[in-house]
Length: 249
Length: 251
Image (cartoon, rainbow over all chains, first blue to last red; front, side, top):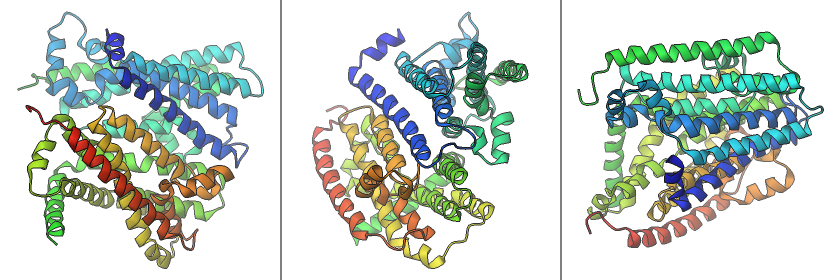
């Protein structure tokens, strides 16, 4: 249904596809400019950077396809519009309906482009990834996707306590930091991006695991972070719903 | 004179209206400073011993805050929801309202973003030559005009398409890449640098920032002025064509 709706507007489709291409092209160009001046950046080679951009693009694509159409601008689009009230009346989990029931399939183009850049990065790497590296990457990408969903739910849940607080612009700005390895940033920001707003888990950690393999402790930390943030999102949503009294009350 | 008075009233009204949305304005500040901050970290990692990088990017952050434009939200949405009709009926040019809101938002972003600029400067221990900063003022003013004209020009496409945010997003990517945020223009590969120096985007961010940072002694105001004249011409043509195409709700 979402795909049909998207294909009905062909000019918009062209715009979306073009923007996906140019957005990724700009990100890659910015990195290639750096590598025209240096052989490595904060210990990361060009190939590693491409793998990181590809992984980041892949998870961003999954977010914009499956999560953003439901949770973006939630105080306005989810609560004040009365959509949440409708979901609460349905015989299914309100968390599932509110966070995953709609999608923008055309945004999957970002996933395809991400896989393309990922393949480019693997192609120019000194040595191909090991089977263990690929498995670690897959596990960590799934964990990163769960963390992404949980962060979006936590952000949306804020609306139950502070309905006028719109942090979407802030969230999407902070998301941009995931496009670079955390090693590039100064220590306080690195700590923040690893433990508080875990953008490191979105791209840096899986990319490093793909090309160099991962310690079992890294994979365990990824799974723990996914389970922890997922549980926190679920509990926060439930607590928020207990406060919620309706769109108009 | 009448236009200046009207603009003054509109500016005052918008500054007061936006004062109630300070939390949202703070998120816009964060949005504005993220790209220059990333540039700062990246190029500081490439050239850790070059103090000019810190000075340049501190200036870029300030220039970005002072020149941000959001006409795709403030103006284009009025085309989409039909309230542009109200503005068209007023006995004053529509652009006064657009410029008034633009200046009000910029003023708030500058005030709210000043601590970030200050903190960055202190953390990096950058020292500015205040004569260079003063000399960058006319370049900064023209940069602010250029960014507004560029964003307004792209926002006018809302008369023809409902994908104005994609159009403006594409325009922002060009500014990011060729304007001096992704990398100082001098560090671009030769071919790309020559292209960037001719396009208007360098005059929007990089040129005033380089002059304020003291990495460039003087630039050509004529280069910025030429682009201002050209963009004003294109905006005027598009505006007339757009208004002719615009159909008010109910007509």
